[in-house]
Structures are given as C-alpha cells and as structure tokens.
Image 1 (cartoon, rainbow, N blue to C red):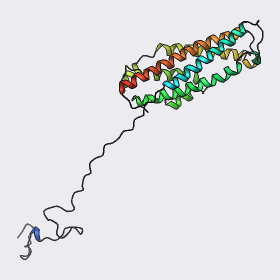
Image 2: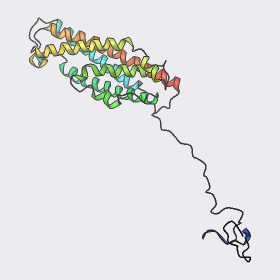
Image 3: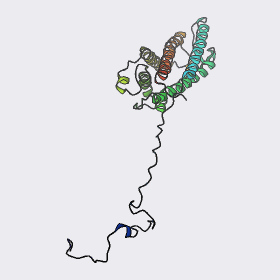
Image 4: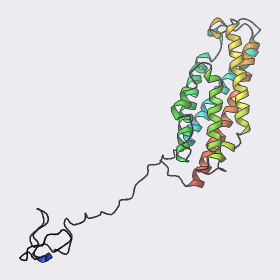
Length: 256
C-alpha cells in the first residue's frame, strides 16, 4: 500500500524503458534518458552595429565663405572709392557703381554661410555631442525668423564652438558646457548687432537704398560696419573649422 491507500496492480511495471512516448511528436526510437522536446539550439549572438554620424569636413564650404566675403569686400571698396570722388548728393540705386554685383553676392555669401553652418552643426553628432538642443536644421532656420535672428545665431555658433573644442572629449557633457567660447564669436556678435541696428535705423529713417542714399556718409558707415562684421564672421568660420578638423583627428571619427 502506498501513501494514497491504494495498492497498485502487480502487473504494472514502472520502468522508464517501457514507458511509451511522452509527447505526440517524440520519435519512438528516442533515447528516454534525454528530455523531450530537446532544448532549442542557441544561435550565436550577432554583434550589434551602432550607427554613428559620420564626420564631414567643412573645409571646402569654409573656403567658399572666405572667397565670397572677400569678393564682396573688394567690390564694396571699389564702390566706396568711386563715391568718394563725387560731391555729396542723394545717390539713387542706379547711380551706385557695382550695385547689382553686390546685391548678387550678398545672398550667395549668405547661402554659403548657411551650408557651412548646417555641416558643422551636423558634425557635432559625430563627436558624440548628441544632447544638444539645436539641430542642424534649426541652426539654419534661426537666421530667417525675425527677432530670433538677433540672438539665436550667436547661441548657435557659441554652442558649435564649445562642442567642437579639441580640448573636450566626445562623451564629457560637463566639459563641453564649461568650455570657453572663443573671443572672436563675441566680437562677431557685437559687430552683427551693431550692423543690424544701423540698418534698421537707416530703414526707419527713410534712407533705404530703394529711396536713394541721402549722403555718402551713410554708405561709408554701412560699409565700415559691414567690413568689421564680415571680417569677424570669417574668423568665426576659420576658428570653428580648425576646431573640428583637430578634434576629428584626435577622436579618430569616421569620415564621410
């Protein structure tokens, strides 16, 4: 008698070798000492490839910015020299020399700057700076939004310069926040704000180019401010480009 109070029949043999298949799919000749169903075959885990942003050199885009800024400055100097030989008078748009080439160079230089800005902003992801709030698209579009384009470009270039600093590593977020903003970025921001303020003052005072320059001093003042702003901008482009090239070599990032 077993624990249940019922005696098992004597003709029942409790031998594992006589126990039939325990599962419908188990073969009859299956070794009973091996459990059924067999354990699944574990495949070798394939290495996971993490997609990183590639580094795209901004040297060529920076060269176009230098060239267009220098050409614009040269043509502006020629126009100012021509105006200096004439007596003061209300200059109309048609009498200003090289007015059409200058008006064509301005948007070309601005487009080259935006292309360069988009590239250097995208390179920050290749450096490991993925926590930044400004995307490459936002770095471009902020130049077109009124009032935002007064302060946002400075924040964009300051952020790019700090994240591109070769002295900071690719994963140290605190070091990027504490990195110093190059002085040339502050100089460019000051010249940029002065130029925009002067242009607004000229526009609201009714001396816009479409109405003619009231005096040659207005043209000279705009030119001098423009020289300073463009020169500072060229140094900003040069500094950030040099930063990114040096950091790409230090980190050994994949180049596109």
